Length: 190
Figure 1: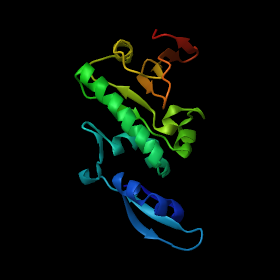
Figure 2: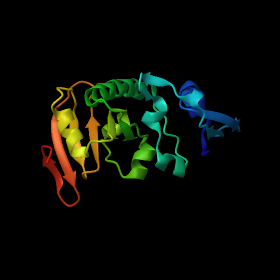
Figure 3: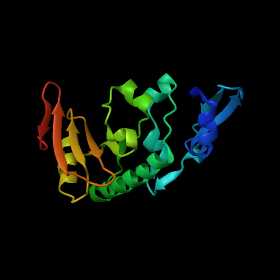
């Protein structure tokens, strides 16, 4: 179980979200500039549902964050965005009639930097998920989503390995892109 230390003021401001996400307080120094030590629990009771099939943990969990001891915790605004994203994932799930595997959704700025994400990534705002579905190639999934009439900002087939579904708070561009090693972004799903 990963253990992280975060500034006490972060604990005080976000105690409810910390507990919802499955972290347990171990101890706190409670001095000026002190740190709280948290432990990540794998208890099934810490799986707050955003929608019927998607949990907060699923939308924030990261192997990189666990390995590096990064607390990948959304703010209230980012949590609202994650609910909007989970609703979009529910529509995709219903359409493909299969569970969706999310490899990355919300990323804190520290986690985004650690994984090499772009500074304007929708993942930072809780508005993007990288997904796969068993029984479909990423290209098949991207083409399926593109035909759904689902509002999205960007739908990107990434490295023929996963599909990035990005939303926007107000204006979805319906942008279709493909990226492969050495090509940069190409218009459309190729």
